[in-house]
Image (cartoon, rainbow, N blue to C red; front, side, top):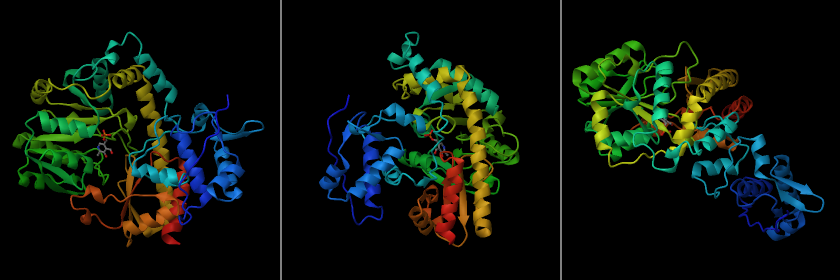
Length: 475
Ligand SMILES: Cc1ncc(COP(=O)(O)O)c(C=O)c1O
C-alpha cells in the first residue's frame, strides 16, 4: 500500500561547504533511518520538491539518485518515489536499524551529515559481521516462558546462569579462578566503579594511571575521591611512585594501558601486587579489551596472579560483544564480596534481565566464544591493514604508539598539532580524535597525538582513510 505524500522541510544552508544535494540527501536519509519516514511513504516528485525548497531540479534529482543507489528509496512507475522497507535497509549494512526518533548526540550528528566520512572513533565495534540473527534468536528465546526472570527485576547480583558462564569464560580465557558468587553484574564499567565507591569502604584517595581512562576518572571525582595521578614508564604504572603517594586503591589497565597501549610485563605486575599486599590496598584491574591481542601469547589477567586476593577485576562486554548491551561485571575479593552483597540489598540490578538472559543463552550455546574468535581475526586484519597503510603512506613522518593489541592506537604526527590535524582530516572526510581528555591536565598531552579507533572501519575504508589523511596532512 502506498501511503500519503509527505512534505519535507530540511533546513538547507547555501553557505555550508557541503553541497545542497548532499544536505538534502543526508536529511532524507536521517528521516528514513530514524523512522520518521516509513516504509512505502511517498516522497514528493523532483519537480514538486525543487519548487517547494526553491532549489534546482538537479539538486533534488542528485539527492534522490544517491538515496536510490544506497537502497533507501525506489522509483516506481505509478507510485512515484517510495521509501523502501526497513528489512531491505538492513541487508546491506549492519543489520541494526532503529525505529527511534532521529535525535542524536553531537558526535553522531557529524557522521550522519557526512555519510562518506571515515570515522576512526574509538569505542565503535564491527557492525558488518555482528551476528544479528543469532542475537535476535537469543533475545526471542529469552522471552520464552521458561525464563520467568525476564518479566521481573531479576536477581540483584545478576542472572546466576550468566555469572556461571562468565566464571567459566574468565577461567578459560583470562586464567581467573572465581565462583559465580564473587561475580556481580553491572551496566557498564562506570557503573561498576560508581557502585564500588558507594557500597564499599574504598579509600578516599585513589591512584590512577596518568594518562588514564577519563570515563573512570570522572566517576571517582564525582564520588568525591581525591585522585592521585601516577606517571607511566615503558612498563606502565610506576609502582615506586604509587608507594610514595599513600593511596589505598589504584585503578589500572595492565593488559592494555588506556590510552597509551602499554602491556604491563609480569615483573611490574608482581611489584604492583606486592604493593597491595604490603600496604593493604586494593587494585581495580580494568580488563576492557584483553580479548584483542595480536602479537605473542595472550597474557593472563593480573587477577590470575593475585594469590593474596587484593584485585577487584572489572570486565565488560562492550568491546568483546556490543556496547549497546550495557553489560559489565566485577569479580570481588572474598573479603569485599560479602560486604558488597550486604550493602547492595536495597538496590535492584540495573541491567535488563532480558539482556542478561539473552547473553546467557548466547554464551551457553557457544555463540560468544565463536564471536570473540571471529572478531579477533577480523580486528587483527584491520589492525594489520592500518599499520601497513600508515607505514606505506606516512613513512617516517609519524610514530605509532600502542600497537600490540586492542582496537585503537595513537599516532604521533611529528611537529604538528591535534586541532590542526583534526580539522584538516575533517575537510578530507576523515574523523580522528585527540586523546587529551585522558590526561588530568589535557595541556600535558603531547600536541602531536591523535587517537584512531579501527574496530568499526572495514579494511577498504581503513586504506582509503589513510590515503585521505596523507592528502590532508602531507600534500
Ligand atoms: C579503559 C576502558 N575501560 C572500560 C571501557 C568500557 O566501558 P563500558 O563497560 O562502560 O562500556 C572503555 C571504553 O571505552 C575503556 O576505554
